[in-house]
Image (cartoon, rainbow, N blue to C red; front, side, top):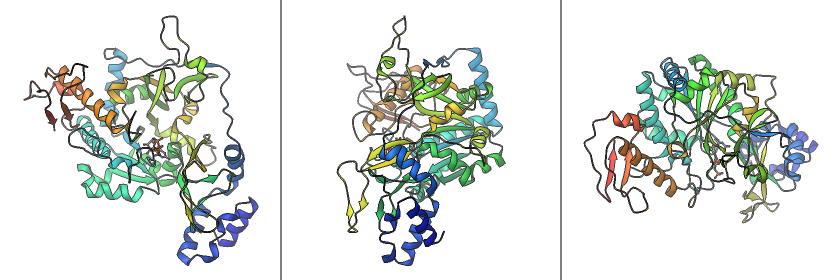
Length: 469
Ligand code: UTP
């Protein structure tokens, strides 16, 4: 797109301000800004500014909100045994791939660099990416077939992510089975709706949310690649949760056998107002209602037996049919996930050309969320799992969902596996394991698998650090 075409387009929507330093830029700077502007869907900007920036978006809650009927957690049931066998069969046939979304900025954690590099395990301090890679190696071995891995990055961390994998020789995985692709970017706006500049030659851009993954899968060619390889299902997970089951044959099998286009795992909430999305049936459609939007009267509601009515928390673990992604993103189909507004501190260049680092939120960022696709799916399935088995994300530098709580939860999990396998684990007065324990996914990925291993250690001593690798 030529400069004058950009100028006209921007003028027509009152956004010429981003070109205020244009004439002073060198050729490379001009080309950079031109390319960013050309990539913007300019026609949609006025609608976004009106609907989300100048005015806070109105949440259209369904009129009729009911709890979801989730598949229960159970270890002993015929349907689940069949589902697990089906999942393993699909894996063996090469019809399942892992899909990691890792395009976020991880601002709350405050780690410089892709979050997947963050050292997360209790003893070896393995990075998150390595934990997932080892799980995939183990799952591929069980399946008897190497499982492809798609990794969504963003312009902010794509090069660094690729370099990290290269430096670590892809953690032993076959490089040809890993496909990185960057997601789309969205511009940040000031509160008046003007586009912000991060520098004289660059818009302030950030990734367009994990809901952008649908578009990115199509636009990057990843979807075509999946179709070529005969992949039918994706096991979707996020970069911050090392105890996720990257591949769960039971969940994938259940998703497949029930004809679900998009399935989700849920856990019982820690409290009525826990800050997680709530799976609900809204006006007949399965969907996630954010904690901030669920009326408190419903959040607090209890059943006759005292249990919470709305207790199905969302943990961002999904199974997705490739045909669903294909259908949603086919040319001409109008995949129109809503945008979510976040008020953030975004550094920007002021009219004097100086970089300003705000101390208060000065800008609006817009993101799409993957769970907003659930109402668009046929037969969406919700499966209940246990928080302590599958969910302990690293989101914050301290407090809840921090490296400290995640380390604690990993140790608790490994201690339970060991105890189930007959190993004695010392416990403190408060019941916490009195040892630092780490089990590599290459050694065992579940309590059941651990039981099949010849364990040299029968008893862990108080204060010991023990690694099973
Ligand atoms: P979060 O919602 O925790 O966002 O992402 P974040 O950007 O990583 O962290 P903060 O909010 O800045 O602290 C949940 C998951 O979704 C991915 C993240 O990489 C993480 O795996 N994600 C998020 C994307 O892939 N793209 C995005 O645009 C946003």
